[in-house]
Image 1 (cartoon, rainbow, N blue to C red):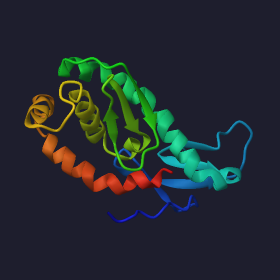
Image 2: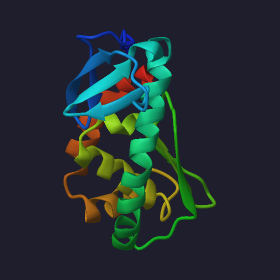
Image 3: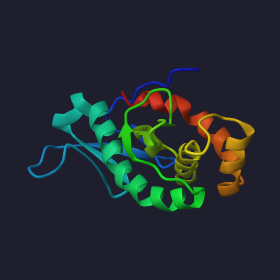
Length: 168
């Protein structure tokens, strides 16, 4: 798989968020302004945080994703007819999500770069591992019951996999 170039974290750069590429503006330091934020459909990075741009973006993605997942997982778990013991969001370079035998789910902070329906696919995929800890036909039938278009979503998500390497 081809390595995606790391963003430069300079003005005129764009960063992926929910399937779009939003512009990045490097702004002057101002008291009370966070080092990195999303404001008015653009990312803003304070000039004094440029050396930390990649880690600030990764931290922002994690912070944005946690409440999004927390609001979606209970309803999706109910649809799947499963429980889970908790979840975490981490910087991952090779997987969008995982499910442990104990029912703990883990999601890549890079999911923020994917469209909302692809995030939903990953949540459903990992929840269905609570029924089948494999990728058997039974596993995929559980996924299909909730997301009949899972094949299309999986294909689109695979095309985004190089984006995981943007977050280090």
